[in-house]
Length: 363
Image 1 (cartoon, helix red, strand yellow):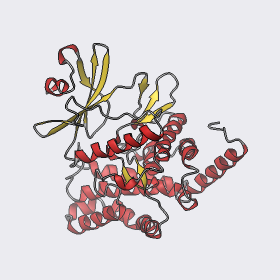
Image 2: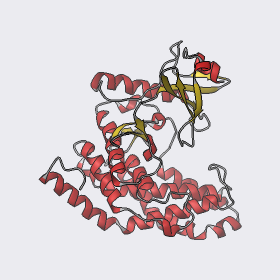
Image 3: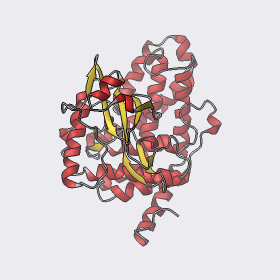
Image 4: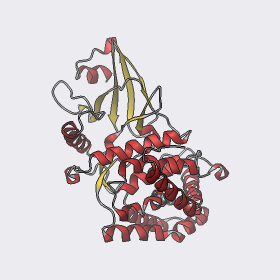
């Protein structure tokens, strides 16, 4: 496979080393290097991305726009094969190659607030730079990816059809999801009222999707652009809240290890709003804190729905895996909501600091 794929790009596989790279869970990724060159080779998971050509068209349209409006911006787009195609297709498998960005690195977990700050700044910058881009040019790469009403409806159907044993096991989680239906109701109201503006949104803002400069840790750019499509800013902000705030991730079984880091929340707000403060409407800014509830709740709903359905979507390692994940997210959500008043204070202080010293970043 490697010889055929790399040959389509004019690369000699005999002079190159190919090894697995990164921690992504969707696509298969390798680093290809040697003979003075380095690339990232990736196979797109077409079980998740059923229309890979939509990905290629989206990236091409964004690249063309940024080349014209921000030619110095580091936009890591795939390299065309010798025949000019975006993908090399072998036995219905879709492969592509990216340039490897030297002196860059990524991290899998937020270890310090500065990392959250630089990541949030890069995701905000990406959306800001595409503020005048016609978002209608982009095609959905995963239909209904962050459609919370759909996820809640799927939960209701799963609950109706689930066996008694599964419902009994998930009793507490089910009660929590129902108790918090207001999160979905608020989302519907926001969308119906026009309070949220469609924008170019990354939709997968985990920390590993930002390249950092090796020596300084400063953010360079965002990567993994397959989920870039029209959406609302709460998706990107919410996913950062969900994946950055607690050192314990969604796989943690001990909920006592789940804790909200206020300094990381502050870093996310500072970084994102330094780029997006002039872009977001007054109404949108009121939903910055809500964004965390939106994404954490939706992920909890999805995990519990899959558990009730018999674990048909997410890969599991043990029988209660999806239930544990769902309870994990519900605990994170409750701890997040308990901090809302404190978050409001933090936002007010950041805004005051910005007025008093616009260049102020982190204490």
